[in-house]
Image 1 (cartoon, helix red, strand yellow):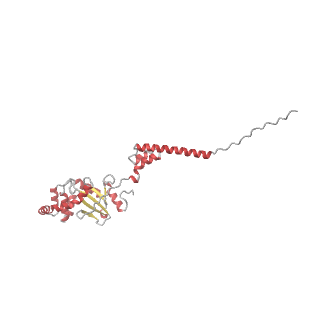
Image 2 (cartoon, rainbow, N blue to C red; image 1 turned 30 degrees about the horizontal axis):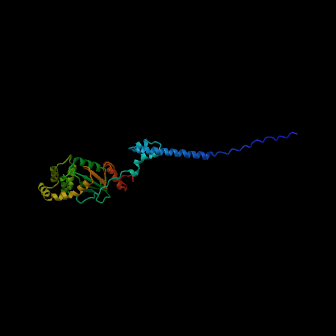
Image 3 (cartoon, helix red, strand yellow; image 1 turned 180 degrees about the horizontal axis):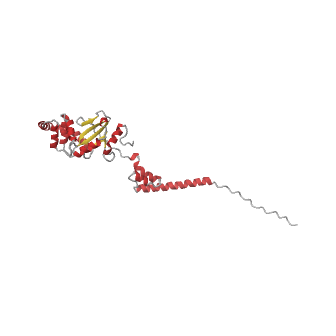
Length: 265
Protein backbone atom coordinates (compact mmCIF):
# COMPACT_ATOMS: atom_id res chain seq x y z
CA UNK A 1 0.00 0.00 0.00
CA UNK A 2 1.53 3.25 -1.17
CA UNK A 3 2.27 5.93 1.41
CA UNK A 4 -0.07 8.91 1.27
CA UNK A 5 1.80 12.06 0.13
CA UNK A 6 1.20 15.10 2.28
CA UNK A 7 0.40 18.29 0.37
CA UNK A 8 3.37 20.63 0.02
CA UNK A 9 3.29 23.53 2.47
CA UNK A 10 3.70 26.90 0.88
CA UNK A 11 6.42 29.05 2.43
CA UNK A 12 5.01 31.68 4.72
CA UNK A 13 5.38 35.19 3.28
CA UNK A 14 6.65 37.91 5.55
CA UNK A 15 4.53 41.01 5.86
CA UNK A 16 6.44 44.05 4.53
CA UNK A 17 7.48 46.58 7.17
CA UNK A 18 6.15 50.05 6.32
CA UNK A 19 8.93 52.52 5.39
CA UNK A 20 8.94 55.72 7.60
CA UNK A 21 8.67 58.17 4.71
CA UNK A 22 8.06 61.33 6.74
CA UNK A 23 11.17 61.06 8.95
CA UNK A 24 13.28 60.15 5.91
CA UNK A 25 11.98 63.18 4.00
CA UNK A 26 12.71 65.44 6.95
CA UNK A 27 16.23 64.07 7.26
CA UNK A 28 16.79 64.60 3.56
CA UNK A 29 15.65 68.19 3.77
CA UNK A 30 17.97 68.80 6.69
CA UNK A 31 20.89 67.40 4.72
CA UNK A 32 20.05 69.56 1.72
CA UNK A 33 19.70 72.61 3.95
CA UNK A 34 23.08 71.93 5.52
CA UNK A 35 24.67 71.60 2.09
CA UNK A 36 23.04 74.87 0.95
CA UNK A 37 24.22 76.74 4.03
CA UNK A 38 27.70 75.38 3.50
CA UNK A 39 27.66 76.52 -0.11
CA UNK A 40 26.43 79.97 0.91
CA UNK A 41 29.11 80.26 3.56
CA UNK A 42 31.84 79.28 1.12
CA UNK A 43 30.59 81.80 -1.43
CA UNK A 44 30.48 84.48 1.24
CA UNK A 45 34.09 83.84 2.18
CA UNK A 46 35.17 84.13 -1.44
CA UNK A 47 33.14 87.31 -1.92
CA UNK A 48 34.53 88.86 1.25
CA UNK A 49 38.12 88.11 0.25
CA UNK A 50 37.37 89.59 -3.13
CA UNK A 51 36.23 92.86 -1.59
CA UNK A 52 32.71 92.77 -2.94
CA UNK A 53 31.19 95.50 -0.72
CA UNK A 54 29.15 97.99 -2.67
CA UNK A 55 29.57 101.74 -2.31
CA UNK A 56 25.99 102.86 -1.81
CA UNK A 57 22.84 101.43 -0.20
CA UNK A 58 21.03 101.47 -3.56
CA UNK A 59 23.82 99.56 -5.23
CA UNK A 60 23.95 97.06 -2.38
CA UNK A 61 20.21 96.44 -2.62
CA UNK A 62 20.42 95.98 -6.39
CA UNK A 63 23.28 93.51 -5.97
CA UNK A 64 21.45 91.13 -3.61
CA UNK A 65 22.46 87.62 -4.58
CA UNK A 66 20.02 85.46 -2.63
CA UNK A 67 22.92 84.31 -0.48
CA UNK A 68 22.18 85.74 2.99
CA UNK A 69 25.84 85.68 4.02
CA UNK A 70 26.98 87.59 0.93
CA UNK A 71 24.08 90.01 1.15
CA UNK A 72 24.79 90.66 4.82
CA UNK A 73 28.45 91.37 4.03
CA UNK A 74 27.47 93.73 1.21
CA UNK A 75 25.02 95.64 3.33
CA UNK A 76 27.29 95.76 6.38
CA UNK A 77 28.93 99.13 5.52
CA UNK A 78 25.59 100.75 6.26
CA UNK A 79 25.12 99.16 9.66
CA UNK A 80 25.02 101.76 12.41
CA UNK A 81 28.12 100.27 14.06
CA UNK A 82 30.15 101.20 10.98
CA UNK A 83 28.79 104.74 10.63
CA UNK A 84 31.66 107.24 10.92
CA UNK A 85 31.65 109.18 14.14
CA UNK A 86 31.54 112.99 13.87
CA UNK A 87 34.66 114.79 15.03
CA UNK A 88 34.16 116.91 18.12
CA UNK A 89 36.55 119.68 19.12
CA UNK A 90 36.95 121.52 22.39
CA UNK A 91 36.43 125.10 21.23
CA UNK A 92 34.63 126.96 24.05
CA UNK A 93 33.56 130.60 23.65
CA UNK A 94 36.26 132.94 24.92
CA UNK A 95 35.74 136.48 26.25
CA UNK A 96 37.57 137.93 23.23
CA UNK A 97 35.33 136.14 20.71
CA UNK A 98 32.70 138.12 18.83
CA UNK A 99 29.33 136.65 19.84
CA UNK A 100 25.75 137.13 18.72
CA UNK A 101 22.38 135.64 19.54
CA UNK A 102 21.25 134.16 22.82
CA UNK A 103 24.14 133.90 25.28
CA UNK A 104 22.10 131.42 27.36
CA UNK A 105 21.17 129.22 24.42
CA UNK A 106 21.61 125.47 24.70
CA UNK A 107 23.08 125.25 21.17
CA UNK A 108 26.25 127.02 20.03
CA UNK A 109 27.36 127.53 16.45
CA UNK A 110 31.08 128.31 16.25
CA UNK A 111 32.46 129.97 13.12
CA UNK A 112 36.21 129.96 12.54
CA UNK A 113 36.78 132.49 9.80
CA UNK A 114 38.79 135.42 8.46
CA UNK A 115 36.75 138.66 8.31
CA UNK A 116 38.88 139.97 5.44
CA UNK A 117 37.94 137.01 3.20
CA UNK A 118 35.04 137.86 0.90
CA UNK A 119 34.16 134.25 0.06
CA UNK A 120 34.23 133.39 3.77
CA UNK A 121 31.80 136.16 4.68
CA UNK A 122 29.41 135.27 1.87
CA UNK A 123 29.52 131.55 2.69
CA UNK A 124 28.90 132.04 6.40
CA UNK A 125 26.01 134.45 5.79
CA UNK A 126 24.37 131.92 3.48
CA UNK A 127 24.79 129.02 5.92
CA UNK A 128 23.44 131.00 8.88
CA UNK A 129 20.45 132.36 6.96
CA UNK A 130 18.11 129.55 8.09
CA UNK A 131 19.44 129.19 11.63
CA UNK A 132 17.07 130.54 14.34
CA UNK A 133 19.41 133.17 15.78
CA UNK A 134 17.16 133.88 18.76
CA UNK A 135 17.59 130.31 20.00
CA UNK A 136 21.29 129.89 19.23
CA UNK A 137 24.55 131.45 20.34
CA UNK A 138 26.88 132.23 17.42
CA UNK A 139 30.57 132.56 18.28
CA UNK A 140 33.17 133.88 15.83
CA UNK A 141 36.80 132.83 16.23
CA UNK A 142 39.59 134.21 14.06
CA UNK A 143 41.18 131.64 11.74
CA UNK A 144 43.38 133.34 9.10
CA UNK A 145 43.09 132.40 5.46
CA UNK A 146 46.84 133.01 5.14
CA UNK A 147 48.99 131.63 7.94
CA UNK A 148 50.55 134.38 10.02
CA UNK A 149 48.34 137.15 8.64
CA UNK A 150 46.67 138.19 11.88
CA UNK A 151 45.91 141.86 11.11
CA UNK A 152 42.22 141.23 10.26
CA UNK A 153 41.69 139.47 13.57
CA UNK A 154 43.45 142.23 15.49
CA UNK A 155 41.25 144.88 13.88
CA UNK A 156 38.14 142.88 14.72
CA UNK A 157 39.36 142.75 18.30
CA UNK A 158 39.91 146.52 18.30
CA UNK A 159 36.33 147.04 17.11
CA UNK A 160 35.05 144.80 19.90
CA UNK A 161 37.15 146.32 22.68
CA UNK A 162 36.61 149.94 21.70
CA UNK A 163 32.85 149.82 21.29
CA UNK A 164 32.43 150.15 17.52
CA UNK A 165 31.71 146.51 16.73
CA UNK A 166 28.05 146.86 15.61
CA UNK A 167 28.89 149.53 13.02
CA UNK A 168 32.11 147.80 11.93
CA UNK A 169 30.26 144.49 11.58
CA UNK A 170 27.56 146.00 9.39
CA UNK A 171 30.19 147.54 7.14
CA UNK A 172 32.01 144.22 6.83
CA UNK A 173 28.81 142.43 5.83
CA UNK A 174 28.03 145.11 3.28
CA UNK A 175 31.43 144.90 1.58
CA UNK A 176 31.96 142.57 -1.39
CA UNK A 177 35.17 140.69 -2.05
CA UNK A 178 38.38 140.55 -0.06
CA UNK A 179 39.31 143.48 2.17
CA UNK A 180 42.91 144.66 2.50
CA UNK A 181 44.43 145.78 5.81
CA UNK A 182 44.30 149.39 4.64
CA UNK A 183 40.61 149.08 3.77
CA UNK A 184 39.86 147.46 7.11
CA UNK A 185 41.54 150.38 8.89
CA UNK A 186 39.31 152.66 6.81
CA UNK A 187 36.22 150.73 7.96
CA UNK A 188 37.35 151.11 11.57
CA UNK A 189 37.79 154.86 11.02
CA UNK A 190 34.34 155.07 9.45
CA UNK A 191 32.98 153.22 12.47
CA UNK A 192 34.14 155.98 14.83
CA UNK A 193 37.82 155.40 15.61
CA UNK A 194 40.03 158.27 14.44
CA UNK A 195 43.11 157.26 12.39
CA UNK A 196 45.51 158.76 14.97
CA UNK A 197 43.89 156.71 17.71
CA UNK A 198 44.05 153.57 15.60
CA UNK A 199 47.75 154.02 14.99
CA UNK A 200 48.39 154.46 18.71
CA UNK A 201 46.34 151.36 19.57
CA UNK A 202 48.22 149.23 17.06
CA UNK A 203 51.58 150.57 18.22
CA UNK A 204 50.99 150.29 21.97
CA UNK A 205 48.77 147.23 22.12
CA UNK A 206 49.76 145.16 19.10
CA UNK A 207 51.37 142.36 21.12
CA UNK A 208 48.41 142.12 23.49
CA UNK A 209 45.93 142.04 20.62
CA UNK A 210 47.90 139.30 18.87
CA UNK A 211 48.01 137.27 22.11
CA UNK A 212 44.20 137.44 22.29
CA UNK A 213 44.04 135.58 18.98
CA UNK A 214 46.55 132.85 19.86
CA UNK A 215 44.31 130.35 21.72
CA UNK A 216 41.87 129.97 18.81
CA UNK A 217 44.61 129.85 16.18
CA UNK A 218 46.54 127.20 18.10
CA UNK A 219 43.39 125.14 18.62
CA UNK A 220 42.65 125.23 14.87
CA UNK A 221 46.24 124.36 13.98
CA UNK A 222 46.39 121.39 16.32
CA UNK A 223 43.10 120.13 14.89
CA UNK A 224 44.49 120.47 11.35
CA UNK A 225 41.44 122.45 10.30
CA UNK A 226 41.10 123.37 6.62
CA UNK A 227 41.03 126.93 5.31
CA UNK A 228 38.18 129.09 6.59
CA UNK A 229 35.34 129.17 7.01
CA UNK A 230 35.01 126.18 9.35
CA UNK A 231 31.83 125.63 11.36
CA UNK A 232 31.04 123.67 14.51
CA UNK A 233 27.69 122.86 16.11
CA UNK A 234 28.13 122.23 19.83
CA UNK A 235 31.72 121.37 19.02
CA UNK A 236 30.85 118.89 16.24
CA UNK A 237 32.95 119.64 13.18
CA UNK A 238 31.10 120.15 9.90
CA UNK A 239 33.95 118.61 7.93
CA UNK A 240 32.12 117.87 4.68
CA UNK A 241 32.62 114.11 5.16
CA UNK A 242 30.54 113.05 8.15
CA UNK A 243 28.70 116.32 8.70
CA UNK A 244 27.92 118.64 5.80
CA UNK A 245 28.13 122.46 6.18
CA UNK A 246 25.09 122.83 3.90
CA UNK A 247 23.04 120.94 6.53
CA UNK A 248 23.90 123.40 9.31
CA UNK A 249 20.28 124.41 9.96
CA UNK A 250 19.23 120.74 10.16
CA UNK A 251 21.94 119.93 12.72
CA UNK A 252 21.04 122.97 14.78
CA UNK A 253 17.38 121.97 14.84
CA UNK A 254 18.25 118.43 15.91
CA UNK A 255 20.29 119.77 18.81
CA UNK A 256 17.49 122.17 19.77
CA UNK A 257 15.12 119.18 19.79
CA UNK A 258 17.48 117.25 22.06
CA UNK A 259 18.43 114.75 19.35
CA UNK A 260 21.78 113.38 18.24
CA UNK A 261 23.40 115.58 15.63
CA UNK A 262 23.56 112.74 13.10
CA UNK A 263 19.90 111.88 13.58
CA UNK A 264 20.76 108.16 13.60
CA UNK A 265 21.58 107.46 17.22
